[in-house]
Image (cartoon, rainbow, N blue to C red; front, side, top):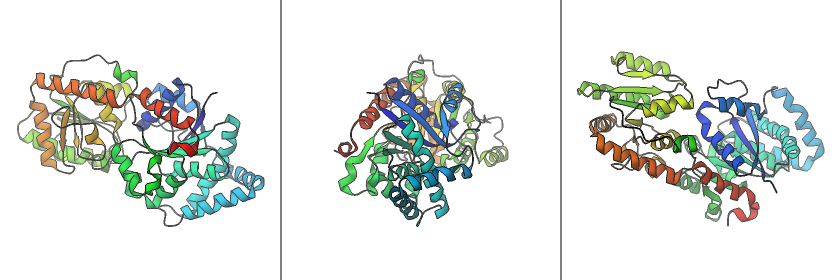
Length: 407
């Protein structure tokens, strides 16, 4: 019998969320029928052909506006007044001491009312949400309305910044199980759950597909190039990276730095590049496709990611699979994958001098040593982050009755 699962995501597909697409596709390769549901994302800019295909397979809750939620909400109230009232009270409780006021939570209830008939029509037996924010709340409210059991994946760092204000303890208590993407993430969930419920927390890593596994080994680039891949935002630390790049160049070390990505801080980052006279040394690409990201990583000696807060960045996995060492911070799940001196360099978050030192160490490491580090990076990530291996863990969880998942 085919396992039918619905995925609820706030925005899908999305350039920075290719790991969700890979997970869904891996589940389908293992025989799971996945119903894709997104709150929004029907008109966002996409660069990957795979994402365009995924958009055509996704149903969007808010595509017809808020008023389109009214009829499903009234229908749910009429069909099962007791369940609707219970769900309404739950939404009201979630709105107390929340980061968003009560009207948002009533909209989440209305979204759940719209989704419930879609699940029944598709015969989905389980709902899985990505991120412990509003997608997890919508999945919880669907369950309260009489829908299937639910689970959700917590990525961080946002969920760990404000667990009480997004109702993470309540969402976890009601869930069949909760997925953490690293041991660090599991530990943070433990902080907000009773000991009796710790067995609900399952570690399922984000994974890589064969497009990364099967890339043949390529020689370490001769150019003194480093690449940083990610949204240009405060938590990724690109301003710190620009400051470190200035120190490296001032020390007379040759450097080419590529910032692959875009985001709300692009203007500020580019202004700092200009102010420090680094235009000849630093290039900002804007959003690029997965294939272009792969090319930028392969053209660099190493990936550098000076993050202040993280879960476990997928781009680190991708770089290591492509046999490129990593320079990053002692933050969250990163040290579980990057081992200092073996497959990369780690430094304290926020320490610009330590970052500059790590960058110089990478740029001046002999080619034979870099080759050995690259091979270790490849071996480690493939042993821990194969998407089909990780998806198989989810298949097993989706197939078990909710009452036994925590056992």
